[in-house]
Image (cartoon, rainbow, N blue to C red):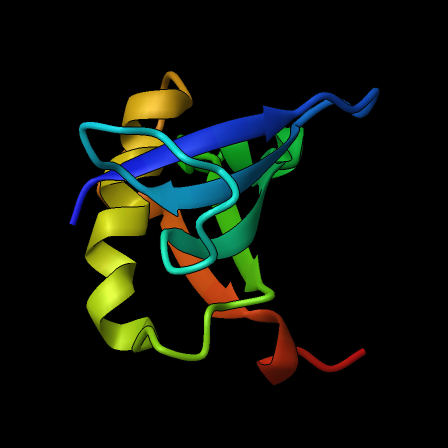
Length: 106
């Protein structure tokens, strides 16, 4: 499954927000069947102290919310990772962690 993402402009550093749709030859944002989810990608920078100890890679937390109830999250994860790799420079597959918002607790 290929994705089309509409980025929501926001003023925060290290935060990217998208509305994700299934990519098709014809783009119809009113078609509710093509809507997949909302996605927030947060870059977490490594503390200087840990960089000195050899940690080099930043971590990206991808939070999925408003997931279309007809879509299985497990089938979606690899496509979301591919989308993030394409849209956000300097990411790697190992550094992306995907969460569903309902599974997060404060």
